[in-house]
Image (cartoon, rainbow, N blue to C red; front, top):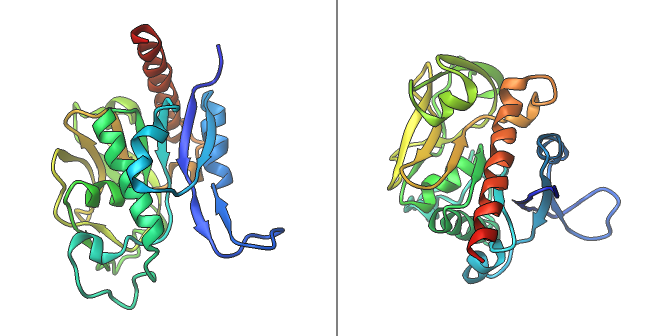
Length: 239
């Protein structure tokens, strides 16, 4: 059985070691986790947002990775704080279009860190530009997340609490349409979003950081690829 194809939207980078020009980047550990799960991770370059749905038709699943901050203008905040990254409009528009297509097409998807925030913004939600995080729970640290009993996240990761690798300074504020929070940190920060219809999981942490040694985190990628196999089979039956 051939590996299902997992689209990974590339991060635009102005400088990549070994290249003379700007590059399109996929994190190595993201690729390793997808490969370990039995999928084939392929870079999806930013393109015309109107083509997102047609471009995704060739794929069995999508993994939206971490990256720079979403432009606050995308969620109606006219004041960008000094701690918020300089906007990359092309990146934001491309990723938002991909996520909206994922929801519309009901493609299996895993959305990581920035990916969760893009999902929330794509569906009309807003973000906190700068977390009040005096304990340093969320910036380059491990902390616990409490999962909602009966949620898809708890089915994948196990009931109760999960230890996660966290690296972010922004977070969900108002939750987007069709989404629900099924995991939170002890300080109340939303750590997991699920959709009422689409087969996706969005996590605020970085499961790729320790997926190679933590089966609980690797399970997020394993389930993504399992869902991708089923999505491919359904598509072939209906062809």
